[in-house]
Image 1 (cartoon, rainbow, N blue to C red):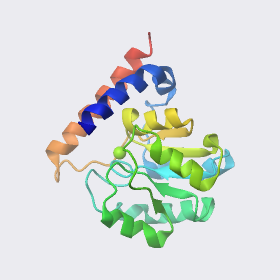
Image 2: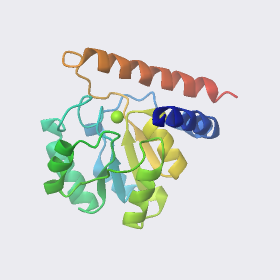
Image 3: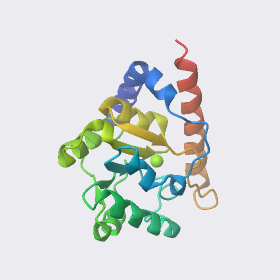
Image 4: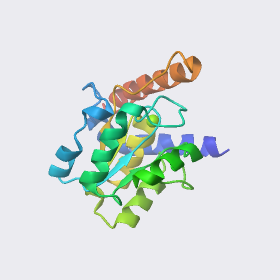
Length: 191
Ligand SMILES: [Mg+2]
């Protein structure tokens, strides 16, 4: 029932925000480590919100990939320890335990993206203007749509981490979803 309600909400919001979604750059190949935290700060971003699956690791992983640790430290140093968040639709305890000592806050107990609740909670916690908050996500119809609804900035990860050898069915499912989302958004924005 919850899933059905979330799908209906997604379709309603897709209709409302289709032009904003189509403007999100989905053609530039982009991985998380290619994003410069210093450049974001220079361009007025004050709060960074990171999705987990696909963005910090392949789907379903307990922890971010090891090589991202310096990049995560950079984010905390540049934005400050109260200004970096993880907002995942799967807030596993292992992930929360990993981010706690890094001073990165995981937002849990909120409605899943594309509901904007998690982002609105972050806006309220930081007291920052929505436009200075940026979400980095690999999904158009979950994270990016939530960002459009909340009125925050967003960067789409177009080269997400995948582990086809470890979880082939799950990864193929999400690869298909990402492709379809991009296609649907571009097509629907014509109207
Ligand atoms: Mg994701």
